[in-house]
Length: 215
Image (cartoon, rainbow, N blue to C red):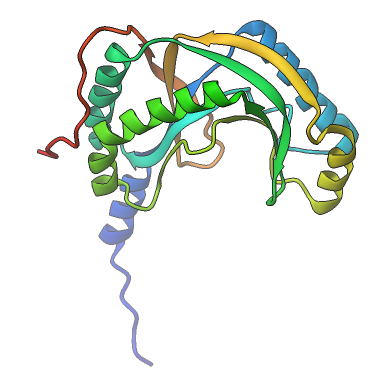
């Protein structure tokens, strides 16, 4: 029988790389009143429909996410700082409940607020997109549909029940988004998100966003 040689150094290298890979999440959080309102709905989904991925999710609006080695994230942070310096605070208004086809219920944004978030996401993409595509080509996403998640990974039965009670029902809340928050989570099983930076939206004049050099 032909022997199969396992290169332990190879596996050790892969394990080492994995321990330095993180999932980064750039978000807007909401004010305490809106957070409490959203959390109450999340808890309802958990208690009445059995949605495991509901109440344990902290309300947030995702602007950008990627999985990248920690040594490559400095360029991303520099870009986030630049965009935040020249971006003004946003007035975020929530409107009604909607769902995606793959088992996710969410609260939608008013059209004007959604357009402002998409504009900000576009500036982020221009500033850091090339770097992200270089070092995290398959593990990155810029916001293209702003929303606040209520529950995800819902079964067909859970979704059907929620549709009867919540679909297109109004949700009236608003808050001022004045800073972006960067979270990260290790790829090691069981790791939790930790906040590593915040970027106040200062609204300073100037700021042209182009795809910069990687080096």
